[in-house]
Image 1 (cartoon, rainbow, N blue to C red):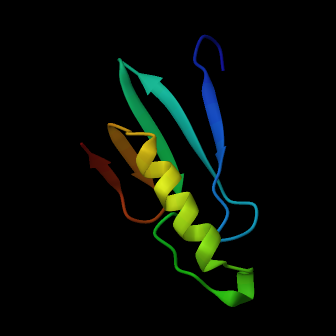
Image 2 (tube, rainbow, N blue to C red; image 1 turned 45 degrees about the horizontal axis):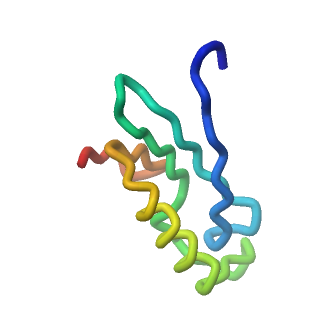
Length: 76
């Protein structure tokens, strides 16, 4: 998008096609984590093993700001 680069990160678990987005803003890593806090629901094909792997992956990105789909924005 213009000069800004946005990386799509595959994070299955909550649902098979879940993705997060990572970008830089004013030198800070900003992660748009979507529904990473669940809920896990077999109706939408949630998978606990994939979910746990995806959580570990997102933590390893060391974002400065996390923008959640349902729970707000977290700093640090």
